Image (cartoon, rainbow, N blue to C red; front, side, top):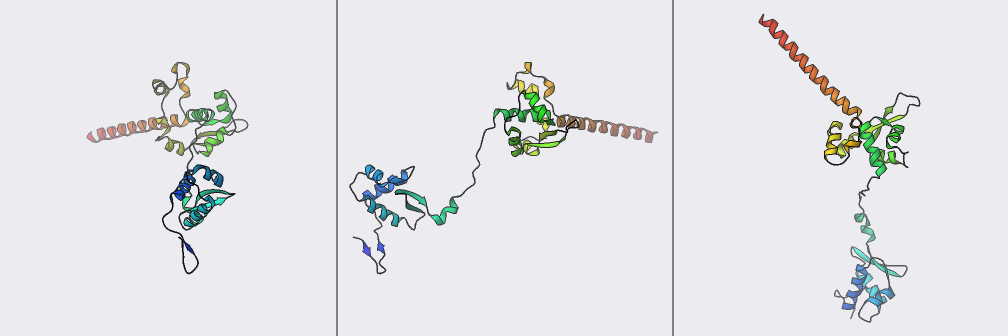
Length: 230
């Protein structure tokens, strides 16, 4: 028997019946809210399902999850005052389209390059938002305008591109020979000259310049030493 307190609040027993446990388990395991008829068809005992649901609703009213009835269907939901704890930011990974991968590869190895030049190399016109997707990822950025009629915008890779692919500099990118050895491309049908970038060549030139300066310093040092000896 249920006991009634002085304040007229019904105090349900802490232990629930086997039939109530069945109803509880069925609702908990359901992928969607259940009607009373559906619950009745699944339980093994003949009981007043509506009365049982009301009892369970009261039982869960002050807990972290509540039993709620919406449009005559029952389900467990997180308590409203705790809903903020359930919110989270989730990163959804999406694969780049073939067009986006080809476009990125062209920019990486031909930068700085214009939209028209990318289309010429690919042999097809740009798809919808292909370049914009790469810019949203912050892998590609504008690199000024080309000094030709129309002044088209040139594009190149960003520092985020290097960071994402764990590269220190563009010259760390695989060469045509390395890609061929790895079986990623057929080197017999690829012009090796396309596997170089403006920045790649700039880095090579800077290295060469540093070596020249180093040699000049050595020559000057050697000359001054010989003059002192005389």
